[in-house]
Image (tube, rainbow, N blue to C red; front, side, top):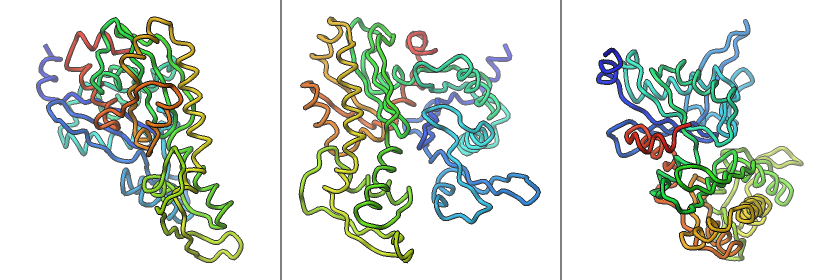
Length: 342
């Protein structure tokens, strides 16, 4: 009885806490709310820590803070790296969305990586509960992503979904509502940003920050480097003189910087195909591969994967929101929930 009363007063939420962004989709809404998974912490002289900013405001501070303020990204590879900071981030997002009604905790579907241990699952449940959730259901990311991308996950047909996120790339072969095979490689958008920082320092002699590298990746990043006229003026600190300096970076340079990360992703996909049961591999040859995640939007990554596998490859519509949409579907559809929830 009480659960029915609380359910009428609260709002169901699907939550995907990613390394780069946290996305929340509320029941009845078509678009997910999202903000960077970042919190700015002020370290007082007495050792006390105080939250200065959360989300976009904290992300804008990255690389620009004094010594007593630190910008923390509390989620690594889809798991909690700093519990207290992650709780503050999630609570802030939930209050922003649900408003002052948060005292009536929502029912939450929380996305977790496939292969998460029982200890890690307990930590994710406790995180959501500490942030204000009334009940918590855990949903495996590959299944949620596949459902959110519109794949028929409950059918007896092999489907391959590749989630290229900020912290890692997860490849899963799905059939009959379960994961038949999964492989995870710790290469994603963050690693690409780091590769760009290193490449520009080595080849152009300037140091840049993570935010600048991320912007370069969005504007010039490519999985298949080629000489063209596209370039970007990049400002940074000269590694020798320490003074500000501007250089022109061509797309072919950025593509070269990303080659190692792209090749690691492709190698993992090829290895996954080799370990897929023959009948499911035959299904995938017909259905193709679906890619989701923010880094799936890297220019020409689809062409590179298609060339390596010989299969049709597509990026799902709204690839960054597929996982949270699938988790929301699990809460709304009990039959799908039994297939998806972990």
